Image (cartoon, rainbow, N blue to C red; front, side, top):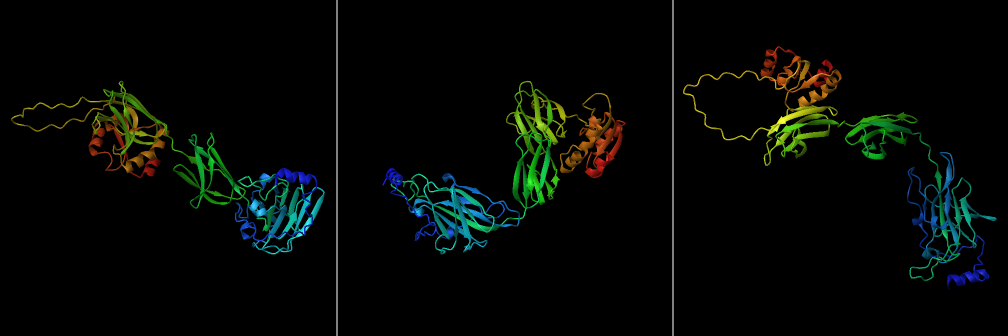
Length: 466
């Protein structure tokens, strides 16, 4: 029979004279929608059974009960529209209720209301079928709730839905006015509310695209984007100890109930610049190294000018290499960058070495005079005070430089690694003990009339003395 034929029969009163008595108990046999598998297995963020529903496309909505923490109430855990195989042509609301431990709540009651009527049914059926059922009329829209305690409500349950034919377009068990629903309630105690705190932090030297992680016991609990002004926030955080992570930074934070913690994360500044000119370097390869790591590499233009930007704090060397040669033709001295300063470098590539002509050996060699100390390579007015670091890229020297840089910048003191450049100063403070600046360089400085000081302590002690 087509849906049109059945609709005509309904209009003429030949079909659909269903019994409205709630005592009707249709035999369901081995209907597959019965059984323990229909209990909710999912839980929400509070650990309570979560609502499982496929009935929203059929206009069914759920109204949750408003209860105080610690109050027992009936919670909807499932609202299920029966499939054709499950329904088998019926038009019922099947109702079940469970205790807190999951067992059936026998002899509890459900209340069904609709426009112009109401009915209360007792849940007392055998465990091999739903605890109660209620047959629906045409066009009837029902609301179902439990009684005896506050209860969630399922609104808009109706059998007045179009045909749902089988995949081969044959008639199925779900046709106009022949749709059924299963609703399951469970006794729940509303959880006690937990007072929370919040984190409102800031990232110094922020940039676009950053995300802060909130971690606890090695697990990421939440993430927050960093806004354009460097701020980020985590709201409604449970009290406890956490770790905030941002790239290679991590700091501990403690969240207390009702309190706001305002941590600050600082990214390393990478705005230093090394620029300059390599005379005779057109077409050769420029390389920037820090320790054993190559930071940048590329060909020089014909002018030999270069500019290296976005450099972090550290010690760098600029090298110039000829084609197919692994050793640099020329290399700068150590360049100390603090993440925000700028240094200018002038290098000249020497002419390739040629085979030297034989030098006649003097018949009677005399003593070779010692070379006088080289004159400073730079020129200009003397400096008042110069801080001289050892020209060895070791972890100890890098630590000394990192500790003293803030003090040097604050006091605007000249510093570097070139003892000849230091000789232009009135006073030179030497950083390091016996293994630092060679004795020959110290003698050279004394010979130039320079007043010498020496810092031989730890990086922190030296920073305090400066």
